[in-house]
Image 1 (cartoon, chains in turn red, brown):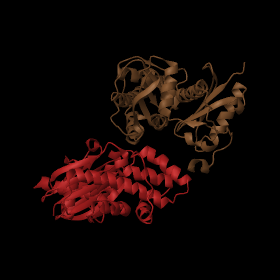
Image 2: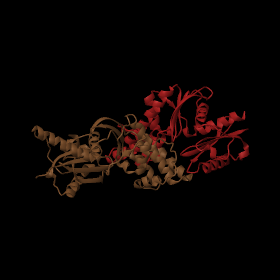
Image 3: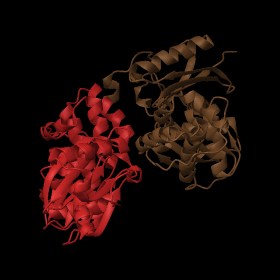
Image 4: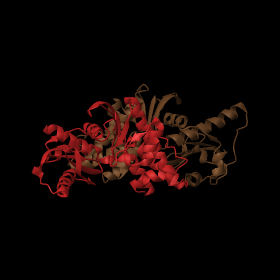
Length: 258
Length: 286
């Protein structure tokens, strides 16, 4: 059986998937750290070890994400948005739109029947349109990222962030803490601000159901709820949404080998 | 002859400024202090300091105008006036030929079109940190520098590194990778100065760029940004000795004009009680 590998180097974590017969055989998520090349090499080694394979057992490797030109292995580099579309298509063949919320950008992609990109809109110029905004505020509140979703869902009075800037938002969050505003209201406010930006992006591409969500941002249940309320739809959420691009890269690797 | 005095109190996001001027428009006292989180308590402390410097008491002050974003927290003020109006008056005092004033503060930036000391039009940006002093405040420590050192550092640059991020947060990451790529510190700083200058210049271009151009606000103390702004606007720019004080100075002078106008008409001056005490939350509610 031929095996394929997809590697996705993100700003926060590096992800890898090995597929065989169209199924996921192994996956791994490790921190990217400051050296993407070292992270990518470590990921490949550990991922292969998980299934007891050697590099030559993999028919094709596709790499996507940040700094891919510095990665010494891989048969091909593919843009992350194409991988996202392919990955979501493998998981949810009926999905026609995917909302991808990453550490440094967000994008809404219209996906065709074969997982090809029909159109897209990206927010990558401003930290407040990405998961980075959440990281900054979670850090102010000394909250772990995986607690953000459940905590924010407890809020009934989301704080309003007035500027749409992550730097000013950080100051606003500090002021709200000083005023004694509960942290769940502040987190719900960030989720609302981020969901509003994402909804505006979705408005630009035009939303077509079904709609799925991917990327690290899709681990945040509070954000998902806000986006669903804004758009008036139900989102398909993968079990491991941060793996979608790596899976898509593996799907690309399968296609390259045909 | 009894001399009379006027005070302007400008509470900005980063700095609180007080100017006391006499009826001859001579500045007799000026104080600049960090605003910090407790600016409700600060205004009276800074005012006391300014009075002490001039050897005056609060009863010697005929009129107090408060301005800046914290202007509601000055319980001893007779009147609140927006910073734009005060600014226009302050820069006019420095340079009567001023037609355009550019102010880059800690939390916003603005361009004012001015004629004969009066505000005609303005544009401002306070929704994004990248066009404000905050951009430099965030990035200076990343470069291992204090904000005060940026100007001089950039003047040693042989070229400027292009900064592609338009966001302060992403700019921080970009600067880290530029440093690790071995780009010289001074060339990166020059690039940052050009980034903020070009952003503010393109905002100012919504008004007509007409000389004289005066540059004020805390960022005007940075000679590198001043140079970059001149280049971006394509004209000479003038900077007051103390570019932080134009709002407070304008407030003091507008106070004088308010009193003089009332005296000329023989009308009483509407004044509040000059209580030199801390503002409370109730002052804000009122």
